Image (cartoon, rainbow, N blue to C red; front, side, top):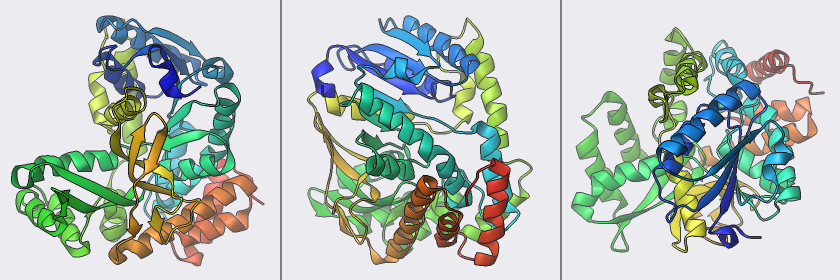
Length: 431
């Protein structure tokens, strides 16, 4: 049964619902009327019962406060939450924040970026997560074969490729990064150019808005000049971003682009910090859960604003509405390439703008990746594909190839001891 056939009574399962992002998702439901988002049931599932029940209680209070009449159930058993559902939101974190701390802290000792979605940290998050996500996807196929998985589990693009190539599941990879950049550019550019359309090319967290159009005409170069004139003086960070945009002729995804284009500064900044991001988030999540468990809390915890990932619910519901309301939309997401982007394999995942309707997501043709960053995208994709192979085969030599292929590593004398230390720290047995 397709998602559109349940338009009056959508059933949504949230896998990993004990995470701190759940309140933002529920706040998105709460502020939308039934006519706009016809949800009849939300099923919350997580393997940690204490966190799950806190988030289930908060979910019920938030929906009650908004007068949304939605049934809420919770379970630690995946199969109970997946039968006859229309959509599955996946936001799992295998190993939790302690594993993220290892992913971030160990690479820094080798002079390599420590980050949960790229470099060695992103690779090891993928190695732990791919087998779990494949199991989840296979359960979705078994119990609700027509359901669409909306994946937020990081590294999102790698997970997207692994699931689409190793299961029969329907899945799209979602992220607020490119949509947030589209919103930023819309606000900055619309006063001069009027309504604009943007197209992106690349991978999740290695993405670029490379085409800006107004009235069907490309205004990309003029758009970069306009954005620079308005944003470069706001902060040193934006000044560097604008300079990079001018250099490569495209808008790179903010923040993440620094890991590749300002790597020495990025590593130094992390090495000089007194805490890793994982340690910061552990403290933030403590505040979030302290608010969430309070029976007087009936809205998203205030501390959630410190967590990051704002815009998560907006892109989720933009996709849901496009798929169920009869109002298609063009939205950025990770999907299987299938010829959309030249120079990348058909079975690779790419992050591009897709036409989204009741049939799913159809990527809009891109063509060639601009030469200024083509090599970077292709190198990261080679790394991602090797990472998936390593996760499936559990072969150390393939894992070493994957780590060596990453542009932020690229040195066997670093890659080999780094790989072995991370394998040991996470207790992963690769032969």
